[in-house]
Length: 329
Ligand SMILES: [Zn+2]
Image (tube, rainbow, N blue to C red; front, side):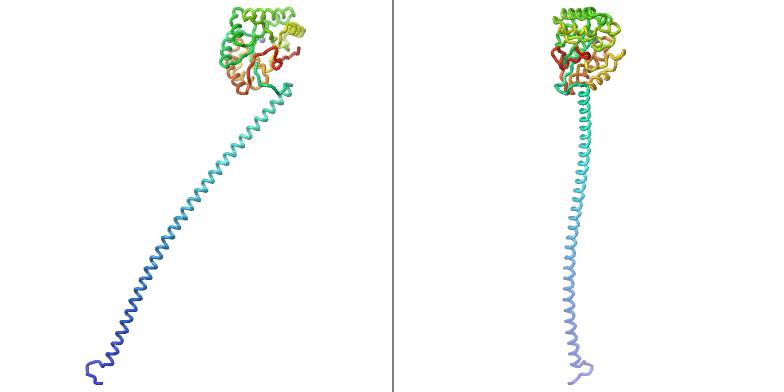
């Protein structure tokens, strides 16, 4: 081969050409690789993005679940608290019920000890002794307001005939408590006693049209005051009453309104009655000028007895339930 001087040989040109061709192929491979790499990176980035989004969603869901769980716990706590409160209330109610039962049992025991049978309806017999007085009308008004009938054991107070009539017209029972209530006049002799009883019965019959068949001894049938005048007066006095068909009745509940010279507070009188009320209660009270607190206590006494289930009735010679007698006839 001829070689032109200064010119590369044919062989050299071929080598360069081959080299160029190789370089071009390498470049193409490099470009292709770069392209695929980019695709891969994009794909990875997209994948990572989705994955991140998914994770965020999961975290949100978990947070929601956590919030819900906390809420549930709070609700359960509240329920538990409510149940505890309810339980405490029930325990308290149970204790109160047990206390009431104990009190009731004690009361029954009291009745049994007193020899009073625990039977029959609860009846209160309100009785007012020593009238009539300036309080009589007030007492009658209160009784009328509550539609309650009572029994009066008055003495004789001249010039007050209409008060006796008002008592009778009000549907109340009128008994006899002797004309004067004077211990000496009543208890010195049987004749004196009879005079005291019959004089008052005549007067009441004249004033009201009805002759009393109920009697209450001044001081009660077991009073000790009579001994100062005649130690043996009670027994013949009882015989006389029986013979005349007059029933004497004492009491088994004392308001205490005669226990003190100065009037006791109405609250005290009410408490005395309500605390000692028996199933059949013959309740001692007084209708005198000196006992205004008895009038003041009367509404609360009636309301208290009504709340405790009592009915009210008047004393009657025919009723054995109310035949309370300290000294047996
Ligand atoms: Zn009296």
